[in-house]
Every structure is written in structure tokens, then in C-alpha cells.
Amino acid sequence: MAKLSLFERRRRRVRTALKARSGGRPRLSVHRSGRHIYVQIIDDAQGKTLAAASTLVKGEKSIGANVDAAAKVGTEIAEKAKAAGITTVVFDRGGFLFHGRVKALADAAREGGLEF
Image (cartoon, helix red, strand yellow):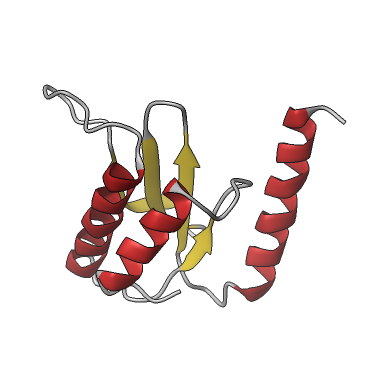
């Protein structure tokens, strides 16, 4: 199988499992690219993004796509979630394996006060 189709199968499997156990909680969605990492807290019932953070900073040099940058984004999304009154979320790794940058982001968000 092609690498992309395996990714898509993983993504569908993760999303299906999340829908089954979400319980009305917002979804913490992660997207990882070669240069940046992006995270959003999404309310699927309304179809709205409640908070977002990424390594892409307008007007400044980007902070990179390494584990340290992912940890900074994790703490930033936790702060924004607290400001919006969100404490519990469902973690959507979006087909990406849970290690490296994705794991660093999740650990930092947990340390920042988000529960998942």
C-alpha cells in the first residue's frame, strides 16, 4: 500500500474512535508538516474553532519544527484553552504517530492544565 493511503486509513480510524468516546467534549486537533506544527480546539457540534496555535508566527522568524517548538505550542494552546474556559478535550492526533513532536505537544498541553 502507498504511504498516503496508510496515513488516510490511520486518520479515519482515529477519527472514528474519537467520535465514539468524545462525550460532547471539544477536539484538540494536531497537524504536523515538515516546517510547522498546528493545533486547534474544535467544537464539532457547532463546527467552530475555539482556540488555535502554531509555530507559524506572522511578522517574525518562525520558531521551527522541532520538539522544543512543539512543546511551546502545547503550552500556548493550554493557556488559550484556559482563557476560553476549556478544561477537558479529546486528543486527535490526526493519523500522525504519537511520538516526537506530537507527543511533546500533548505532554506540554497536559502540563498546562488540559485534561485528555
